[in-house]
Amino acid sequence: MRRRIAVVTTSRADYSHLYWPLHELAHRSDVELGVIALGAHLSPEFGNTIREIEKDGFPLIAKIECLLSSDSDVGMAKTIGLATLSLADTLGAWRPDLLLLIADRYEMLAPASVALALRLPIAHIEGGEISQGAIDDSVRNALTKLAHVHFTSTETARRRVIAMGEEPWRVHRAGAPSLDHLRRSKMHTREELEQRLSIDLLQPTILVAFHPATIFRDTTQEAEELFAALTAVYGQILFVYPNADAGSRLLIQRTEAFAAARPKTKIFVNLDAITYWSLLRHVDALVGNSSSGIMETASYALPSVNIGIRQQGRERNLNVLDAPAESHAILAAIKQARSSKFRDSLAGMINLYGDGHAAERIAEILATVALADILIKQPTSLPQLPEIA
Image (cartoon, rainbow, N blue to C red; front, side, top):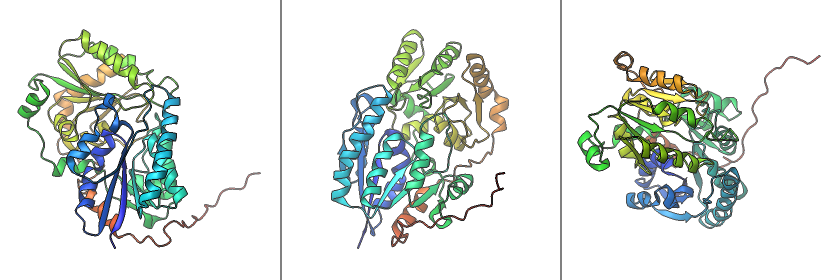
């Protein structure tokens, strides 16, 4: 019998990471694949990215409307509840042998909770990482403890998952699957990008990817310092939309106001994965607080200016320049990133997040791992602790 594997995707970001694992699973004769799309995928405000999944031809077994049209933490919490209700019906009816989740988006708590109640084994990609400036950090750790098979991006992340009490045989270092795009996908040329996006990449250009820092009550409190710095940056500035988190609408409004007042500034609601990764090959630097600035830019030796607290604690490659959320520090980091001395120092660097073969490793383990008794985790040995007087 074919193994039935369900995969949940909630946004353009995680779908770009899941594309090659989905491709590998879809082409295995021993796997019956089912994709469940929810959240921002079905939102016109965030580009209706469900159409990308449909175009790619992966078998969609459910399209779940759950993203509230709000800009608050209460809206985020209610989205989890709505997703849970619909996923209970979907997963209860389809009953996969294994459920694959990725990363750390808050919506992923819904399928994990449903799978727990339905006694469905969970596999999780990208556990063991740290991002202290977002609730994603707690979500990621919760998913790790709910999961039964783990695929980490780095060896340090693998050790951290094992340190959380997960049995070593369950934890596999696969690498970040997003890097498979950089090896396997056909990237757009500069000329193709210029035509597709109506931009001129011969002029100095930076790309900005900035998201709400959801650990703060005011999730956009670091944004004003970024925009203050960007007013003094020369050349073309390209923005991509933030994630669908509390504060995203305020960020979008602030970005639109900035773009309206500054020439040579463009905003993109949604860039498909290939266009986004291709763009990274032709800009001077990535600026913001996105995980892509930490994980993917290193494969191109692209300078990345990481701002504020959102990615605090995540492993860094040599191309990352950290700056506090202060305009003068951000400007100084951008200046360093654009310097030929810094760019030359990155020649030949190796990305610690993987080698572009993650999807093959993930699909093989998902299709073959023994599922008998996989729900029963053995307790870890307790360390010897000094006695408290």
